[in-house]
Length: 121
Image (cartoon, rainbow, N blue to C red; front, top):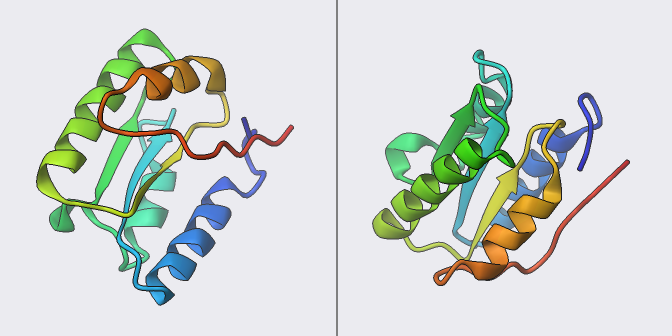
């Protein structure tokens, strides 16, 4: 869990750039509590991922760790997995999301495996 203004989106953009340089295919899911979806816009403007390429999904105006957020995450993952193969999927959560429900969900998901978690307090 990383709180607002701690550099989550900057870190994600740097990871995307590094993966792109190594010719790795990446999909991204961004969660922003705001209806304005600032983080989603910043990531979509990297020219590495975008919704038109079927490798980017933004979940806004909800906490991705809530029940409704987990349902949206499930839908986003299904969409990404059906439309494009990726070496890995990066998930940027909102600063208010709790990681435990996400860890449980991803550990039980039949089509993905949780490789690492970055938590900063």
